[in-house]
Image (cartoon, rainbow, N blue to C red):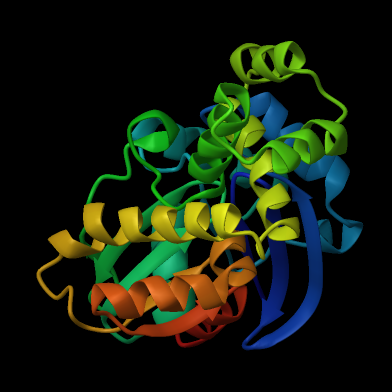
Length: 278
């Protein structure tokens, strides 16, 4: 049996699998080694996972996570996993997890649209091209953090429709000053910005909200997908933003000239298939 984990900036999904059969499934907090020490990661794993995950030494632990690109962060995560499960562990980026989860053994373009955004060209096993996402300040187009950032700025500058802005402040029980303080004092600013993007779903019938999401997705295509060598081929997506606003994503994609092949909320089913053949 194997353990497979897929960790976004919001949460971590864990499965204990025998072939393609899920024996146990669980969710814990996000485990990002950029924000958590080895001890904190180990603490979360031990306290938040069911005891079934620790019954014996498993065949392998496969972990895909946000923040798991730099080698020192990969090492931190691997050490924590080995210490807790007493099992060999391999740590990969969340982007490779998205590609394998979406496309399994097929080649193509795979994208994440969640708290942040990212994209890659995948050859059926590994990532062979990646347009840098650049994070919530310089990039992450089409993500919840980018849309939340734009929405907050429009509310505070008086650009958003007055009724929407009033509803927004009432919905979150904040004043403009408290909103500014929340954004600029947060230890996890991207996550703080992202939480406000969900408000758009309640207002999506308004042209302002629709256009904000549509323009965000068009920015994603212009500043990311356009630079791949095979940009005209179908594109697959995983994450909260692409599932919540699927119809708008498909409209933006069609207007840009690409076809949306898959839209998934989670990479896990594909990851199970990928590792069942190893």
